[in-house]
Image (cartoon, rainbow, N blue to C red; front, side):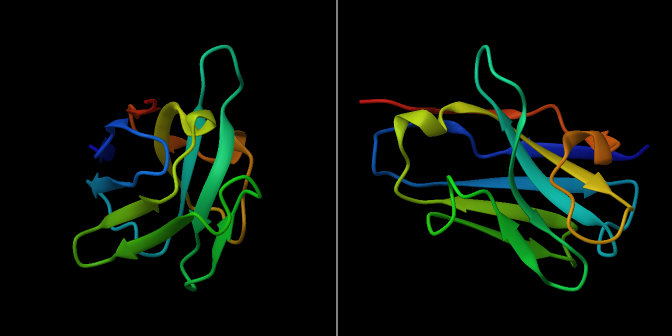
Length: 123
């Protein structure tokens, strides 16, 4: 069974940091495009970052320079290091995978999703 399981969310003060992890099981994800998305209450799910098999990474403008995506193919895991967090980063964060090559920022391009992990940025 193919699964993605996120972890690492929590409550952090503005300016703080968190590192999210997403472990894949049931499939070798090293050749897949992996993405992070987030969804705040009352808002649509939005693209945060992606890592394609060639090693290229992409970021939404709102997180560029603050977030870093990485992957460990041995552990079949991707990470999202989030620094300088802001209250507007508060959301449920999801990881997702797609076999479609290249950069993909639309949630509809990703058929496999984790259940999400809550990130709350508040003082």
